[in-house]
Image 1 (cartoon, rainbow, N blue to C red):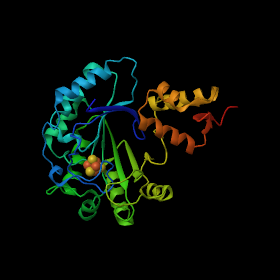
Image 2 (cartoon, rainbow, N blue to C red):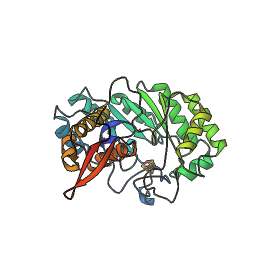
Image 3 (cartoon, protein in one colour):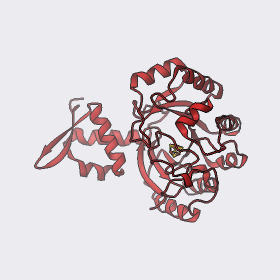
Image 4 (cartoon, helix red, strand yellow):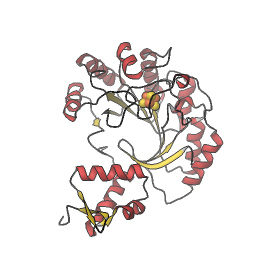
Length: 318
Ligand code: SF4
């Protein structure tokens, strides 16, 4: 598979099948200091919309994976190596997902740089959830944190977010990623907060640098994020990097079911890591993230026996 990856356990979306619509070299309208995909090369920093990867190949991969009726997911998500809305046919691909699996929800993670374009908003017809980024609302801070392509201003981003709010019928979860000393000043936080209250997203998700970033920058502590959440006082706000899967769903997400399945398995008996990974059908990354979280929460422990690593429950009596 070249363009479809996972399912992965996403902090924000639960169990998610990723669709990457940009080439591996990363194509994006920004070069964010915190990007997990590395720096955006100058020649790939663009707002040009085109069919960056072949639509038919993406559809073929999706068909192959989604035709498995046992595959349960919370979302099929457009994300990955760059800005997905730069692909001119992402709306058609979303429609294709709905045609083969109408039961699945489609999410779009976007940096919001193209939402002021009418043609991009039209492509959202088959998308259930849009999660746009808003890391700054003043031009100076926007340039510092997002390093946008020439011609892209924060004014355009805010205009796009307003248009999204007016025209999109699905859910909107705005994400703000705070970087120490760059977009976390009291003044900027206050202005971001004003925009959040004005745009009224279904959720405001605040995040910080928790994975190796493209530039040498640092994240905020949990306490600092809590302070920001208190100051902005928007409901609902999720601190996604520190509260794993605290999404307050109406029903259990697939990710929570996987977590529960793992806890039940290890409650019965210590299980080798390899066996658990196979039983849960997760990617390496998703599996490691889940184990790390459960270790951090003190729900499980690792023990070595006969040279092999086993996971055991710390809650056997419950
Ligand atoms: S918008 Fe997303 S993909 Fe593009 S540079 Fe920023 S974090 Fe990376």
